[in-house]
Image: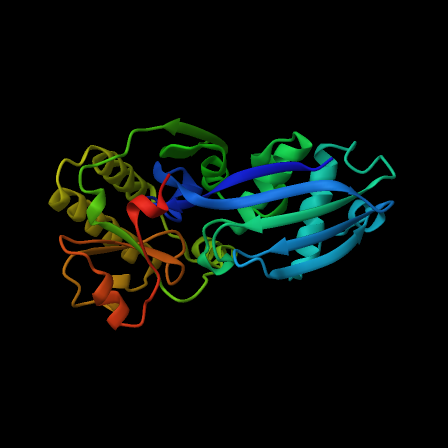
Length: 303
């Protein structure tokens, strides 16, 4: 009998990077996500297939129960080893997982192109946690790392405020449905950014950010309460300037779109994946003329 699990993708609207240090952040679950389908397989092994949105197989491997149980962590893990590590940590959290000699046939199915960066890893981890009835935040911490906001999005169908307090996730469902959502678009920058590498660089170069966290917390609250498009854009611009000083990187607007009539904000890791563009006019033609063909409206992207 096949069991099916599903998790939402994510976009982090405020608090990128600083969410790791306890900043209050606004995150939005997406209409896109990932399925995990589990059925019985061959003895003592897992046959794994990962399907992209176009139904092409982008990853296929067979893992023995023995290599999952005896996995030893090392640096620079391959894609195969990373998945074994996740399954190894899942087994430590639920040791009934691999006790039966019955194997598994597992497939994952994305509803968005995997290079979009909407949470291929977080949706996988949350789906595995649902299947094995374990804590998804703990599985993330033990395997992949990160703040966990993406796990919270995977589990919720509404906008959320997310914050780490004493290392523990605090999730608050919030109402974020401003009248100007028709003016919000998400633009793919034609390259996938490594969240893990970006986080490592952030921690390596981080300075005293206590006051910056207070500022970002105020911006997050203000974004939730914005009544006008102009006020919303002003908050996004202030957020970008704070993060520019922390990361010592150019803002995406000044770097790529200096002539854009509106606001552009990085989402998540700076330099890749999606940005949020806000303008009075539909900006599709502007971005397409610059070579950015993936422009998704707010209503098509956000749950």
